[in-house]
Amino acid sequence: MTGLAVAAPKRLDPAKFQDPVVTAKGERRAVVAFAGLRTLWVNTGTLCNITCRNCYIESSPRNDALVYITAEEVAGYLDEAVALGTPLEEVGFTGGEPFLNRDLPAMLRDVLGRGLRALVLTNAMKPMMNHAAALLDLRAAFGDRLTIRVSLDHHDAALHDLERGEGTFEKTMEGLAWLARHGFTLHVAGRAAFGGEGEAAMRTGYADLFAAHGIPVDAADPVALMLFPEMDAEVDVPEITEACWGILRKSPDSMMCASARMVVKRRDAAAPAVVACTLLPYDPAFELGATLAEAARPVALNHPHCAKFCVLGGAACSR
Image (cartoon, rainbow, N blue to C red; front, side, top):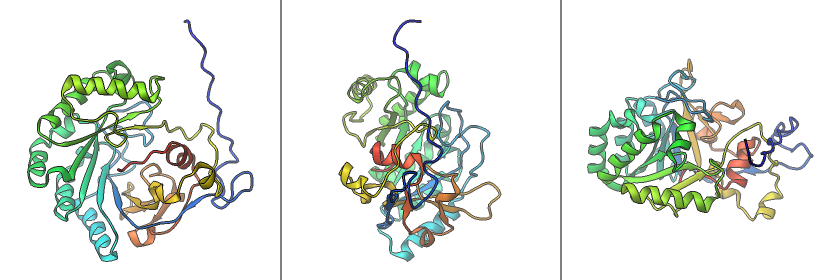
């Protein structure tokens, strides 16, 4: 083998991200105040039709750590959001593969029927196509208030398939093309560092792919094509202190947990729970209660994902 050797990433200091109040160096940890619920995320369940090599939530055809949430349970949270007077604008559905949950069309109709926007994260493969008729009905009834975000890890088929399995690129592109033909509002999610390219080259590659297949996604738009940083909680990353906001020229109000929460339903749990964000569905330190009212409190940035993904990576799961 030729070429330069790539140094192994530095592993995380075990003293970091232990105390929600102070960092390993004794500095005051950054905390994000809750500014009001604008985006409610729903994890439809961790079951997925494929097994990816680096899925942060470990979704697979066998992982049901988060079980299927029901349309009735989601409706209860939507009713609570109204009762609390929240500024809720959008409800996002993630998994697992959301279209494996048979209640998803009913949940979408409920959300859209309330005048809210809906966003679905999907691999656009067979589970989505099993709901083709329902999707077309929703598109006809609610138009652009429904957005489908398709996961396409790389614009090169071989690299995408390396992560998601042989033949998955072709199947996802078929689903993406179907959505485009029927006029759905489309976004695409890729991985910023996958393949070793810089962001500009990645966006050019996606632009060429979209043009070749008639996919109406602007690859230069960071919302239409979201390139997410890698998430490995064992790789070293700086802790975020109160001083970081000024140093980085960022506002805590721009963080996902300032305006979003996610509902999950754990296996064997009697009822769903509300967690701080989409990235931390399993960590008990980020479970905030059973209701939206209980979850309307500050979040200490006490996890590597808070630092690498949100603060330093500048990523957000919603628009």
